[in-house]
Image (cartoon, rainbow, N blue to C red):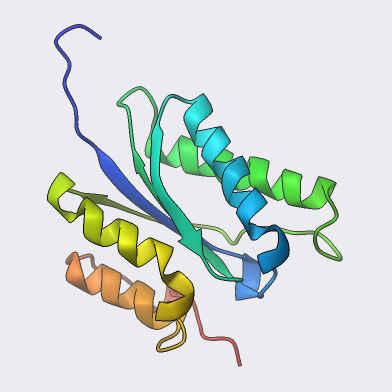
Length: 153
C-alpha cells in the first residue's frame, strides 16, 4: 500500500474454555511456536507470547491488511485443531468464546514484553480474572461483570 504508514501493536488475551488448566508446560512452547507461525503467515510480527496453563497473551505488530477479530479467530481455531490432532488433552480442546485485544503505543512495548514473558510469576500472586479486570480498568474499558471470567473453584 503506497503512502500507507502504520504502527499498530495489539495485545491479545484469551483463555481455555471454562478456564481449565490444560496448557501443559511440556508442550506449551510448541503451541506458542505454532501460534507465532499462524500470525507470521499473515504478515504480522509477534513481539511476545506467553501465558499459563489456562490462558495466553500475544503481543504483535499488526499490518492493516487484516481485521484483528479475523486473525484472533484463526489463531484460536487453528491452534485448537493442532492441540486436538496431537492428542495433547483427553477429550476435545477448545478456547473459550471471546478475547481481549488491546492497542498499545511503542513506548509501552518493552514493559509488555517483560510482563508477558513473566506470566507464571505474576499468577502466583493474583488470578487471571484479577489480571484481566486490571487491564480493562487501566485502559478505561467498560465491561459487564456478568460476562467476565470467573475464578476456578
